[in-house]
Image (cartoon, rainbow, N blue to C red; front, side, top):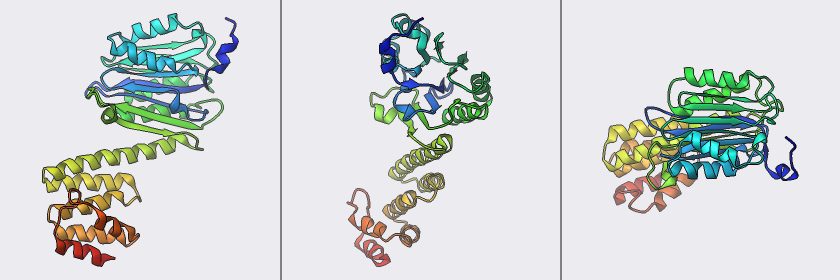
Length: 311
């Protein structure tokens, strides 16, 4: 097939990726790494309760948008991909992986995808890669995903690591992205996104994407802590805040809100102790605490005076 000039206007996103569904939670995810700037802005598409799409090679982002539209309308992943490929005069240069909310998968590697290129579909996942150093990249991804345990996000990360261990993109590394959505659609997509992190340009994008996933997970635990606070479940709140603080590393944010939560339920001594620890590094946290409105910091004037004296 002879390429026509319009093809060069499409993003040249040569890469490796995985789309998958967790059978227990219904979560859907897509993860990718490439030697291409901001790969996540092109390749990764997912919608809770609908499906996930990875569109790459000489990529047409419309595969992501239209793929989700068709699956939302009730089409299976195989039927969706077949229709998209059939209507695309440049399908020979495309590579796509699709999974729907029922775990049905499909993948396409065009005949003109740059070697080494190929894909594997399995039970609830598809891996695809092009412009790879070796033809063992996507089989390694498939085996890593199938043998991994834990949350979907962790298994997706494992597949990316396996690809890189096999040589990955022949050009090296530059960017990575992770998008995981809930199993059920709430109609509020900002709530349905569990992980939506990107590394647009970095020397070690997979290392950085793991760090960002850890930070994103910290905020998931913070939200759980806030729900426990609303229920006045002190043990659960402490447990979730402590997990969040461990995951976020040197950032004092979780410790600060843990202190505020303790103060709000009347556990003043423990709250002040944590706040003292946080403000020993930066007294601006005291200023912030004093500025919090009553819905965020429910306490009395005596406690406010103790906070003020920390400064």
